[in-house]
Structure formats: C-alpha cells, structure tokens
Image (cartoon, rainbow, N blue to C red; front, top):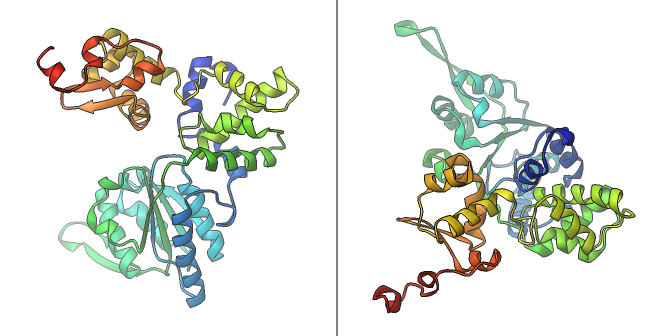
Length: 356
C-alpha cells in the first residue's frame, strides 16, 4: 500500500476498518502468536480449544471440526493456524467466496493430506452445491463426484483422508443448521477489553522493537474498538509518527497526537463514524431518520454506513436502530459536545408523550 497516494481521511478510515490489505497482512502475520500460550485474550475459547486439541493428540486422532464466529480482526485466522501448529499438521487456507462450484471444493478436498487442517474463511458465503458436498465430507470423509451429464451421469464415491475443517464466519446466523451441527466445537470470539489490548500492544511493540510507555499503550488500546488487528495497525502508525516527530518513544501525548493526525478520536471513531453522527444530530435533530437518507447525507453507500459505521456506533451506545429509523442517544450528543433539543432530553416518559 502506498500511503503517498491516499489522503489523511482515507487513511484514517482504513486504520479502524478491520479488513487488512496485503501489506497489513504481511506485518500481521509476523505478529501472530504461534501457540495457545502466546495467544492473548479469549480465555474461555482458549481453555476449551486446548482441551479439544490435547484430547485429540492423546488419542492420536485428528481434531474435531471447529467453527469460529465473531467480528473481523479478533483472531479467527490466527487460531486456525495455532490449531494446525498444535496438531503438527499442515494448513490449507481458502474462503467461501472462492468456492462457487462443488467441483472447486472437490478439488481442494481430494488433495488434502491425512490430518491436514482446512481453514475456510467466510464459510457462510460458500455456494449451496459446495455446501451440500461439504456435509458428507465432514461427516463421512467422502464425496460423490458426478461424472457425465443427463441420464448417463454417474456418481463416483471418493474417499477422503481424515482432516480438520476450521470454519470462520462473521455472521453465524447465516449458516444453515445442517452445516453448523456438523462442527464438533463451536466458539464465539468476543471483543477485547482495554487491558487485554494493552497486553497485545506491548507484545507487538516488543516484536517491532518499538519503545512504548504503559500510558502510551493504554491510549492506543482505548481507541482500538476492542479489536487486536486495529490495535496493531494503530501502533504501527503511532510508531511512524514517533519516529518522525519525536525521539521514537511512544508516550500518551505522542499517541494522542499521532492518532489525531489520522482522525481517530478518543473513543475510536473515525471520519466516517463522526460524519454519520454529525449528519444525524445536526441535519436531522437526532432522528429518527431512514438509513438511505442518512447515507445520502454523508455521501456514502447505504451498505457502507450499515456495515462499516453502524455496528460500532451501536455497540458504543451512540446510535440506536428503531422501527422508525436511526436515532442518536444522549451519549452521541455529549460526545460531539452538542446540546440535544428539548424533545430529546425529555426521554420516552409520559411528560414527553403528552407534550408537557
């Protein structure tokens, strides 16, 4: 990624957006924990997964199929690699959108080695024919390959070596029950607490050979949206600022100044988030307003507002979805330093209902 070709606003929007570009992926790969002992956070998931893997190794068998769900950037890919490492097995990585035909999946499955881990990201976006083939592969380690067309078509059974499927999804509700039920272990990844993110930042700073003070790590952690990937990304941008504008040491003031340059505020809101809130408060009096109208007001696509900005604003208690449209909460007015109209401060009680 060439930072010289982007504006500060574009850079800021990407800094707090969980999907990673190619350069980010390369750096993040170097920062990934290599085993469960190094993995920070997700205590329950780590404990449960450790039991599953230990038991499989003791039996000399492949591990059960694993389903990991949760928001982007919480460590699903990292855990899949750890599963392979803990089992001493190779890993094959692909994604749901890449498997559009049953033949695509059959080609991957037929080339797996015994005990290999197949990581299928965004598994809910796999095509239906491939999904139905996966049922039999997961349960019976067998697929039926159709040869020929029409009345002369025949199904040739193809035996598969035992393997472990690790599926990752950001939308577990879209998985059909027959597929979800075939996973022996399912886990939901939670957002990280600031203290956990501070540990992630200190570990990453050590690997990047960056000097950082505890209050500097706390400042970055507080703006990272509860997501390790974003914390690492912000750390790298603060590192750049500290090297150019200071002596390389990241303090609280340096971190705050650096993130101000990239338009990431004290609660982790970026330009798009604040644009949505400002439009909702200043143009529509706090709502309710429809999503399409709100998207037009900020000059973005409806899907961008709904999928990129809204989830974080709702989680932070700054915006609420109602049957009548989006409305701002009192916390949104306070965050932007604006005074809500009287109808907003009256609340939903009887006084407001009768106009008293």
